Length: 250
Picture 1 (tube, rainbow, N blue to C red):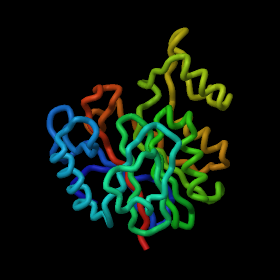
Picture 2 (picture 1 turned 90 degrees about the horizontal axis):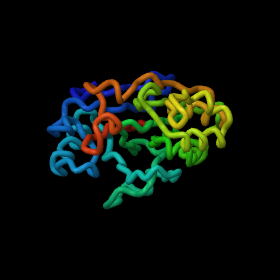
Picture 3 (picture 1 turned 180 degrees about the vertical axis):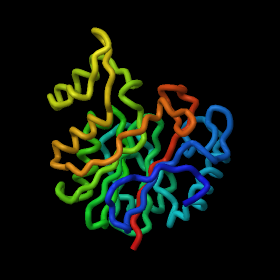
Picture 4 (picture 1 turned 180 degrees about the horizontal axis):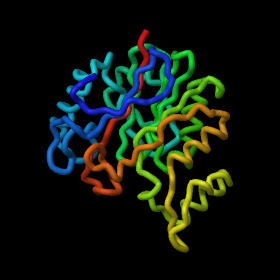
């Protein structure tokens, strides 16, 4: 498809739906940001990040500039069409569109990117779902915003930190158990105060609570695959971000 590395969803989406997640390979950033860092908020050289974004558009022949978001772990979802001429990233953690050639995008480096579409292939959404976002309801908000029927909904879970590396405190564990008792299946206790968390399982449970059962992906770990992915937990604040992008063609 292109020289830039990517992960393409393995899901039965119609041909009108185009989606992928970048890897960290084949960009221009250096040092801890090497090499395809697509985030402007992580103290990388801004000019180099713009070169990376230009390369992304060119190598993947994107139909328009992606709508980059100012992500805050909220449950805010916007209509991407409304921000095509925005001069700064809108504050939101998901965007959706039913308009061809409008590119929805989220940035991640351990948090979970989630794609939504329908069997008709005329609506898509991209969602940034860290544990705070999942707890705050960003998956539910994204689904409801699209207006897709649960029986028609297809979901893909992109690269995120794997359950074996995502340690959380008892406070996080208790918040999720209070939200849905079924969430207990997403945790493995390490000691009295610490748990290993499966964010993929949390997302699946949230989708199932909404009546969505066509859920794909969820088998990649950003933390353990340093060659292909950035990881905030592994590398700290001075690391890059992958992009997950989805759009419609006519």
